Image (cartoon, rainbow, N blue to C red; front, top):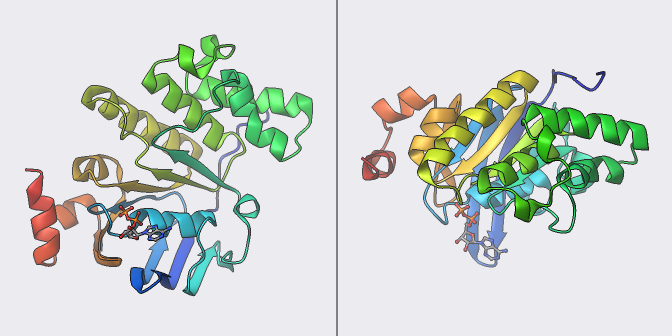
Length: 246
Ligand code: ADP
């Protein structure tokens, strides 16, 4: 099928991005360079500014200062639809009254693909997450893991260059969580997608990421590969945060 496109783009840059809510600076002058095809995690405790960072990338929050570049073009002023990013969240946000197939076709219909292309591409994405047998079911007739796979299929169906994931596995139990981590990784490699992944779970970040940015109080405290941040925490906060779960 012609739909199996592998991405070549998807680099991201945050240049001096700041976001305030009233007097509170929730993201404080951060700079990030995320490479095309990279699995990049924002890791940190609750309230450290991870979701706000992701929301600015998605276009649901506007930075007070700075630039966000996708493939070296400033996207700060574009609407969420114009940014062409896939998204997966903890609560799936599947449409409960729609079948698996209709849920996955939804982003294609919004983008005005032809009926034939909607069908073909949705089928490709559903096959990719191994749910072909379930395409006529409603979300409530699926397990938690299956529902999350529908959300994944829906996020990748239009071949976004970048997929944003905010605690996507937070609602799953520990075993399923690990299995889904591996499935997401496999999908990311297969499609060569850039993934920006938000989690407060350091083990999850370590398992999945090429690089991790540890956030605290709206700042990036440390940035590096999993081994590097784990073995050489750069400051007291990073050491304390990484030590907590052990
Ligand atoms: P994290 O994802 O790391 O838990 P968030 O980005 O959700 O952190 O939140 C960072 C801080 O910004 C928190 O103190 C939170 O209460 C605050 N915040 C987030 N969104 C809003 C908002 N829409 N209005 C006011 N404060 C907000």
